[in-house]
Image (cartoon, rainbow, N blue to C red; front, side):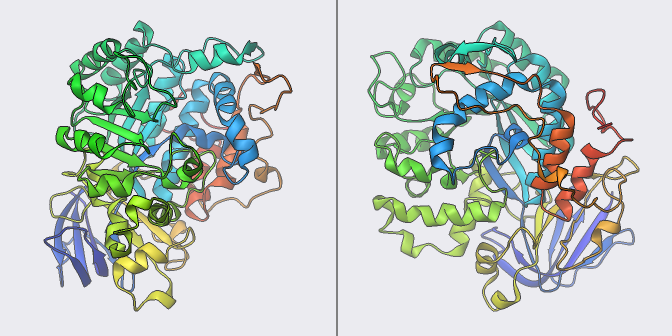
Length: 542
């Protein structure tokens, strides 16, 4: 096994038994943490990294992200709400039918790498953009090839039947966006499980996002979830929003946000994760806690929910106080920053928007804030025993940070929560192995430019050199994208382009991922001569 010894770091373990360690070392054996403490001795084969003045912490957990949406990052942004709010669903309904399997592969690959580049080593990918089996297979392969850990949560029920060039009613398109699960969806899920996710010890596992949700008959939900659980799938993920009007008896959403309906039917369990869920009552939170369920808040993207009577402030503060494992996520990678530390800070600041949190938010510490993205975040994706803390025996999913000098007198947790920016975090994705030019998987530590300016001169995962300089064309990623047209006729959806285009995603990746690590990694898609293992034919851009 290959060893890596990280020396002299301020270690933010998030393990209550270890606490914070200053000027300490960490030894990695293969993909596991072998030892933590001062003055560790390096085995003869160890790569030694001097991390003096740096913070070593667990890899970050993103509990809810639509990874595929990075293919059009910046097309719509939440800082332009007049455009975003009415057109996001239309953009999605146009784009998913315009993306080829190759587009899906590249989007998930780039999206996974971008997450790693920001310090995220585990993600729950809520994959709701794949309306066909070949697209779903390619998307899952792309995320798996990125090396990130977590869940590929395939959305059941996506049934878009229209094609590029069609004009269909918005009612039809919206009705097919997530319809009732049919045999074609089960066939895709079973093929994903058999061909890509048969190894229960692999970094990335198969989850499912059932179509049964608020507005569905409880008996239909029971049938769907029973079949999903019968496959051995360990994660059922759902978007939860309180209906504006209660549904009829026997339908989820008859009471509150639907948790009482699921609870009385015996359907809640430790495999169930509810995302958003802003209007859950204290009784609903107790139901989730008592059945082992989980919550994920996407606070930055949920800021506008405060203005909605059926949504309201993010739930993570109340959920945590109620004892529900609670994490956080980016959600819409299309429209929000990829800097995950900004999302951590937004998760904290948003607590002040909830009147019910104001009594205790003043007692929060930096450690409490980081918990949403580390130890508790791991519990909120059912991986608390595997990752989320720096503990001997756990997977070596780690992040090494170079924080600002002006904050050097602060405790490690405060420096971590307050100081990192995209130019400074240095991702260490050890449990998510990088593939070097030799093709072997090993633990890889990436140090950012503020601490080791020439780190990129080492051979990259795919054998490329330093990143190419950006051109004016590279800053226009949407030249071949599926175009978004704001039609005067708001009752129809018109899809004008046949495909996103390989050059478009390559250009987008150069712009979207932070330099140097991001642009460097993006070359794996822009390169002419290399096709990553398992990629669809023609992945390299000509």
